Image (cartoon, rainbow, N blue to C red; front, side):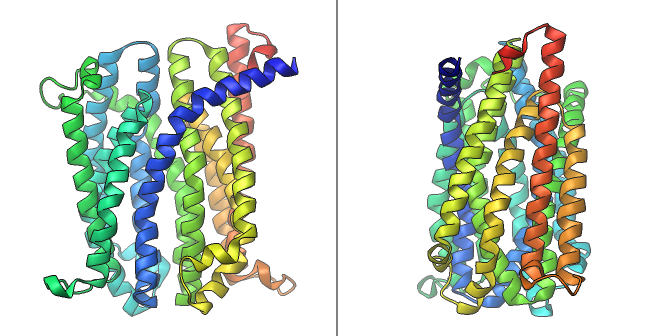
Length: 469
């Protein structure tokens, strides 16, 4: 029995990893955009580094909520792909593009008029001025970023992540010289240093380049011909399919928005503690975001495979893939988090030599480990639930755990802690402690919901419990 279970896990791993590693490399390249800017701006000015932390937190809060709605294209298209409905898969991409264009208008209004978000952060006046310029340049990137999200979700659904990875890695090769030139300037070419806003402008140029190349690939790569993507223009809007995407995408987007704002709003609130505190938080935040790329990749791959098997009506295999994906992600998270904690001084020294910023970041690394484990579990469970088109109940779990315990508890520990609490539970460290506990609670809730969905599905299909293993 144990040997059979081991073979099944190995079989799941051999199916998940070929889809996960291109997503991992591609998303690592995208995260490196922010890492490059963090490294370059850290050597430019402390005020710009603080502005980068606040500005990126605001943009990420806007982008990921809209991105989550558009990513509904992935589970919907995956089920159609599993059912061999290739024309329907292609139409999903067309309708997701219309959705991306509509949501762009919402995002641009927030980025161009960020006063409500700035009121939450209360940055120093000098930092606020830089943040506004930073957000205006990121607004140029938003339309291309949302359209590229539809392209990415579609490719994940049809098991073609390498096409996205190639564009993301190519974008990284362009991002590095552009950011260096725009942040620090190129006197020989008459380019004056722009600081943090220069990195945002570089990002906009890169994302638009990626989108244009991606569209060319869709029109000319023979692999996409069966999906009807190489004849005619953009399909007219189809309210029925857009409505289906919205019914799944709105709770998906809300869940991702809750998850990410529970994280990014930490930067906004921690900025009240001063530029050094928020700069230290930025290093820890960038590090944990980089670590998250692996469980996110495993989640994307697992969710795509589960959706395809549901479309093919092979529910037992879909459940096996879901549980095995969770086990694989948890093992990687425990190992990676422990390694980063053991090498925390060396890792943080790669970002900056500033002893004040390092002193602010070092105490956060223990919570980074716990945070990462919870993050990995929720990423897989959420992806599996979305593949089953279950999104509303997870949204409620996210709200209670991440906004309630994580963000609410973090605010209390940072700004109104009881006198008896030790120092490591206060300030920025207190925020990280509460956020980590919130993620662990979220993970437990989503895994329990995943078990319920699987059990209910097995009962309806009359399968025995042994088929779940």
